[in-house]
Length: 326
Image (tube, rainbow, N blue to C red; front, side, top):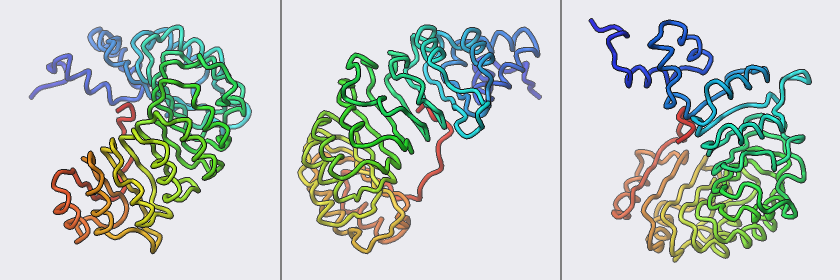
């Protein structure tokens, strides 16, 4: 029977990649071969540190010893709810990430207090920035800030960021490479603010509006007015009606449409009405309906038969993927 010692390096690296960072470091003490494998650049491309309340000293050691130029994606927490003595993300650490990790392209921050961290300290190589349940200063995303910050940023995810409001949405125009925007639970953004913001962000190609106080109809109306080149739309169905969905008819570049439940409003378009609108979207290739309770029902069969040129996906809301860097 084969043992771990019989496995090739490529298989062991794949196994090690599923281990938390702390366990990766521990197994490097098993033997010389495992130490060599733990030092492999491939193993440190994507690092998740959200499992730990990590002292700054340990974080600096990881940065210098293991990550450095190998790092492509980093996920970390700031311990916002861990008490005043908990370690916090600092401007010095953010600047060090930019200096020592020139290949860092994706940064995901969870439950972090960034109110004392200027946006200018973030690594300038970032292409994706995700903020989940984070506190930011009022000046972070305002339009008057330095337009040369994060020149390569293509995607920003703002998930449950309570300070984010209309002025910040309009301030996103400073990121000229921005093409994807995800708003999740940003309850301070108003319908008027969304319309004004999208007017200035007319170059967006992907927009997701999830769990916000905005109605789906008002969101789609703003999209149809200003985002004529949008390719992917994903939004919750709160306040969605058949006339609201119909404003997307004729959108010249729309390739993917995802509607997320739960189904809670009587105005929700019927499967036949969704089919009618989708047939008028010339480039639509993917229609996804999540959490509407239609999986395996007649609604799914109607849409699949009526949209033979599309990939129709009808399913319950999926669990969050562990492959967060994908």
